[in-house]
Image 1 (cartoon, one colour):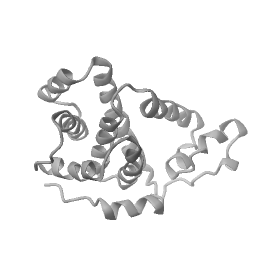
Image 2 (cartoon, helix red, strand yellow):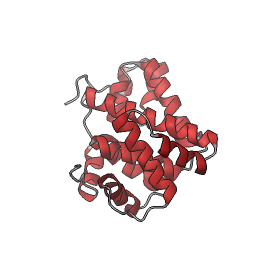
Image 3 (cartoon, one colour):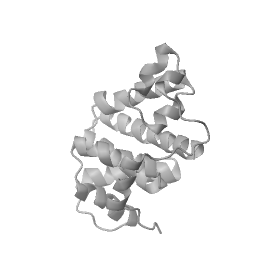
Image 4 (cartoon, helix red, strand yellow):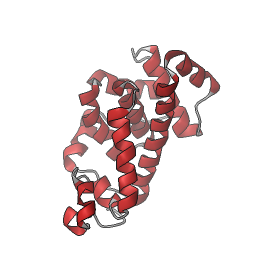
Length: 184
């Protein structure tokens, strides 16, 4: 159960009601800070619609973060979102394989993106080897955006966990299709 009540648009001042255009629990709780929620929306919009980073790679990085941190909310929401950006069911299953150190069948760039997401999530920063591999395959703007995206979504999973935000039932069912494996 969430640590603060979920807000509805009617709970907000008229100038902030647009924050709940997407009526999901993350935004319903975050709207306790309308200015913070507005900043969050701005960054989220840039990541999803304006970043030059390949959207499939972006979603794979976000899914890796959700998977690795066991953030059911983030993981399941982005399973649904990622399908609109070219992520296949096989790609989603490959995240478990990559996390466990098994062969996944993914291309080198996608594996490097997932490795960067794991390293930044677990060890704070991408290793020199991972960064060099990404730098050889991505232009500097896309590489910078990848680091921003991984950083942003690590913040999101921490917000979700600290605020104990409940996952909506329509997303929860995706966990049965793509369950978390034990991480060694």
